[in-house]
Image 1 (cartoon, one colour):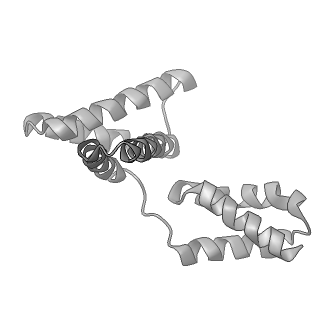
Image 2: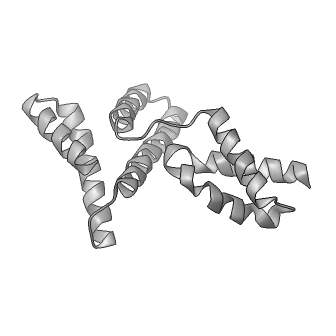
Image 3: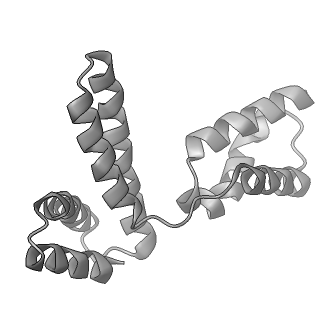
Amino acid sequence: MLEQINDDLKKSMKEQDKFTLGVLRMLKSALQLESINKKGELTDDEVISVVKKQVKMRNDSIVEFQKYAKQEEVDKLNQEIEVLKKYLPESLSEEEIEHAILEAFDKIKPTSMKDMGQIMKELQTISSRCDMSEVSKKVKEKLMSNE
């Protein structure tokens, strides 16, 4: 994954694509910071995690810019997100997420909200391919409806 990012960085330099180059340099900087914090090489899952954080930061900024009607900034951030999404695995569909949640419920057989931690732990296998905050909401709703 890191190799792909480095190759794309070099490619955007050669093609003089300043926008993509800027986004990839910010990503590379975030990856280096994470690598320093970890004191070692990053795995592909950790790289994906950093890319997700970068996308999330931009999505949060979009919300703020929309409050102040700064459409130019919103458009720029959306373009940056498109560049970053290239490095994320394909997201799971709603049906696939629901299926994973049902499997976790079948395996753990929760009886109350106290079992939420176990279910979320079971669902960590899909964490790189979906927004876990959304998964958490769905699990919480399902647990509350079972009580």
